[in-house]
Image (cartoon, rainbow, N blue to C red):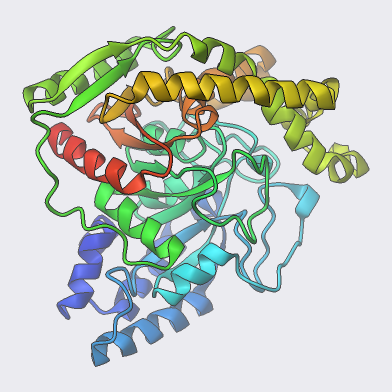
Length: 443
């Protein structure tokens, strides 16, 4: 049974299908592991024992009757604490929303439950999802699996930790500027950022609605595809036999994405590309000069919308917030409506340039993050270090959000060094198939 805590969600589902694993026994195994773990309170905000066991019993009954609803029917999953969960506090990592208890599940949790997923509970996150570091002194800071003294990546920090520490078969998070991909990379997981607008945000605490997306953090690309299906109420793509990489053409993004890389990150990226070449892929350096302008628009686009959404709530009790997050929100007040509209007009032009530059490639590659997980104590005591670390952590992943893409984070085999694989908008299935082939080459 201990092996269950490290198996992929897909393999657990296949075990249930074969009658080798019982959903109730599996769920109890995970709940027992959570309850016994010394870091559980830094990972989970709440563990929903009663709900999980009730859902597992229903999954067991369906399995016994041959009526399973999906491959992941009966598989235990964690949920970031910004997805509404009926009768369970959903606080988005902030005391601004303390004791906020929704009456209904978010649409994606509802979909996943209908498809048979077992809800283990809610996981900690960066405050209001507005940081790529996962450091949250207001609530809890989850651990990084590779370094107990380092940040876990955010904002889906607890989602990543729940999977990396064997306390969930998979986690569901959100990604506005890298919040699925950074914690996935720093905890050696596969993470999927979906295209903006593909997965419903109904019942999800917002940050920037134009950039907010939902995606899974998982142990494999196959899991990520199946979990995307759960979120949408479908079976998800079949990724068991990915096509070989021979003849695939990838771009290695140079503009912005390879500046100031930590030496370990740079080495891991070179080694990953070498393995893809050995598997038959062609890799071509790609410059997209318009990215420089797009990156410069980020402060206007993100903070203006975020502060616009949260201003009244924040300014009613600003003392409840972590000062770094409060300062980042308030920076949105310096921009006017005309600044915001003009910035979106410029971004659309940059997106058209990107589409032309990337059109001839199966995917565009880059390191997920240019830095390794930063030190927690220094983040708390050194303002400049916090700001610089946060900006660098988010820099490469934000490219995918700004350009409106879907994107994957994949482990390279070097701890906390992920490979980012960016696809075209609304092409998640193609991206996942490509990602599965890359995953095989990197394994």
